[in-house]
Length: 576
Image 1 (cartoon, rainbow, N blue to C red):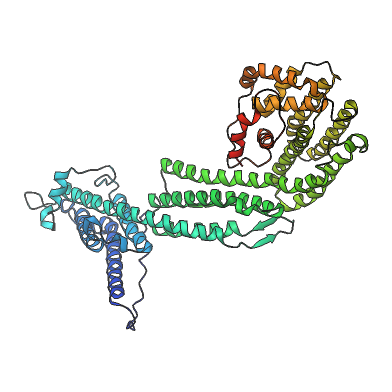
Image 2 (cartoon, helix red, strand yellow; image 1 turned 90 degrees about the vertical axis):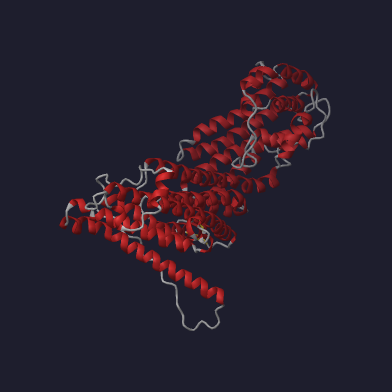
């Protein structure tokens, strides 16, 4: 196998009719032509190193060292002319190079490295593992012609000198490569930022598949450009080029930054959430496909592969989490009409006395059924399950929210309802009605069963505490307080929720139960410590502690015990 030369630098147009061109532009064109000519010539000379070694050297005595002499001459010539074009070793002209010219320069140097390593694969010249000290580097600055390569007897080439000159030239060239690489990456980062921002801010074509799935053109708009840029680089540079990896990392990081910044702009209503969930899921797939394409067409070290996979995995995980987030956020637009339709009536006197067939719970179920018909068409099946997970949590939270709002509105020494037993039986029917609906979905989504058990345990715990408060159960409230704390994970909120439940059915016992729970606070905190603050992937309205905490920040009711606002008010106001 032989090192393949990079594609030749593209010729710049040389239009004779340049009367309208200014003098500076003509100078730039002249420099560009010289650079292209230099890189073309260097590539041609480098390509002959292997031919000299394999076809010419065998015709001469070994001590002539024909291949070594040729490699030395090529190294010196290439280095001299490349340094002239870039502004000597300081590389002062590199900022004037186009991105294509920087790629061509790096490709030429990488080709030199590959050609020498493959030609002298017997270890005669080892570029990667050989180093020269400063004195040796200075000495080889003066090796200017073939005569300098001969041994003291002047009859044979000193291969050691020839080898060191090639190594010397390689290190000089690689410094040029490093400078060009830094310039290229810096400008690529700026240009990538510009086109990524432009793509995200553009209008994206909306489509619906034959199956009814909602999509936009965002994944294609992003990855056509990203893939095209990386393929161009990979076509120009060597298969093991670190610049390909670094450019990929720059691009993936910028895509990640933009996704974090712009995600919520795509989540305006139910349909846009569905489309965004599908889009983000496809962007994750396209990230994997692009990485596979890059690595299949490269010869990277394992360390380099690990780095590339880590950077891409960060982006991939972000897209996956954002897809789940978008699917989860659908609940906001489904419960909006539910809240408007039955929010005020739930737990009212009419709920207790008139809606004897759990009519309000049936309204929730029927609304969910209507929306599920759309969701099954709009969203990919893998994300539909995530959306249903969110709907289960949202159903529980909505029910608890309305219950706590009623507690906040209630005043007086007696129960909010005429008959606690009837109200709690109605509550049991509501819970059963909503649960049965989700259990019917679990027939096609078996993993839902665990979510249903976990979430509905909270409602059953709340109802059990209210039975204890009403005197309808002889169970120990402490046992259920622990269960509730494990779900809420905030001692102050748990304490006040228990107080509110007693306030609904037996206000005169509220102070006593609050004091009892406060005495348990240290044990409760140890059993279920406070959760971390919500992050960018916490779907609004699904964390029970957050929902209740925000509810309490607007509460006007004076509660016994320590001030709830003092402990949680600032926390949840800041998270709005």
